[in-house]
Length: 467
Ligand SMILES: C[S@@+](CC[C@H](N)C(=O)[O-])C[C@H]1O[C@@H](n2cnc3c(N)ncnc32)[C@H](O)[C@@H]1O
Image (cartoon, rainbow, N blue to C red; front, side, top):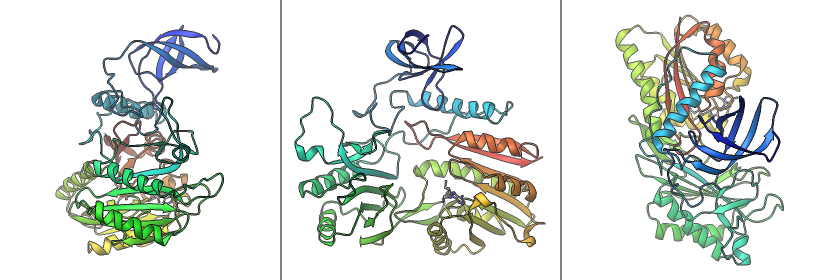
């Protein structure tokens, strides 16, 4: 078998980069551009030592789960890659992703992975969207004038650094988000404002971020530019106020980063308070232009309820005091604040100074007094005051995709918490980390949560209890 040869294949399951598994004369074939349980004619792209990579060029018998994608940019845009699969099947596929990682990486055989908790909204679920300005991706059979070719506001195509698909409708955020993106894009285009080119290092416009609060309905518009143009911002602000009175704050972030469109040095508040408020479990949180907040609010509530319910049961069973919560990778303090009522003392570790400042403000805003935020790069591990050593400890972990550092794992083993809650946006690194802890801990619950419908991403939650 060689590159460019054709194969008839029957696909089995999907693996987590979107390829489907198939077999040909006993050899594994990973096939792109198809769904599980389909008969396809595929062309070999690469022959590797252990497997063959191929691309479906014709679907002969299509899957019963295949549906018509909603979006006209499907297949090109990197946003929603699973739009052509029934939502119920997406959940099964994601369950398998977690199962595969647990078995293959964690060597954990005896844990039943349940179906993910489905998202209340399978479209329009994001409370934050980052739209880029860039040169327009040109569709064939469309006519563009020279100006249009240089201007787009929308989403990047994977692997296309400078080109952007100019969107008129995106199914990930609300109708409001679509309307205001289109309005601001047209306004800037008609005035001939130049997009910034990372290659040529000129032009003003980098990105537009729309953030919306689910429970308070507050809305933030953040235009990211290379410098402050007062005239432009004041005029645009007046237009936004007149056309979209629901916008509660408009911010202009200034970014001179050579590598990113959204990392900014400062944010100028053009109108409003410069942040929006979100409410979870009766607590209020300030969300700033650059601070992290879970992207699918009702799903974050479902996820956090799993922990709050478990803690309520524990508290009812065992009223003994001296319980310490250690929150690793605490961000702006959302989790540790909503869990603080279950503990005597909460210690939070986070690397980013700006997040620590926000977390302290959030604790103050909610009158939470039993909490301490410590700036710490967790790659180097973390230290606890000796006075906490003999107290009953629970650890909550919500790391970035890379998972836990060796130092953190070592420190957890030393501290011997009675329980560990581990939230992960990358089940592969989570499974790896659990394998290091499994000698001393048993998995008492696993629950994937579908935060990002229509994408390959899955959040997984587990509870580890000391053996
Ligand atoms: C998924 S977020 C956690 C959010 C938080 N649990 C919440 O509820 O808002 C991951 C956090 O880890 C932080 N982080 C990433 N690498 C880190 C490191 N090496 N040391 C400490 N914190 C880190 C990030 O700044 C981010 O706030």
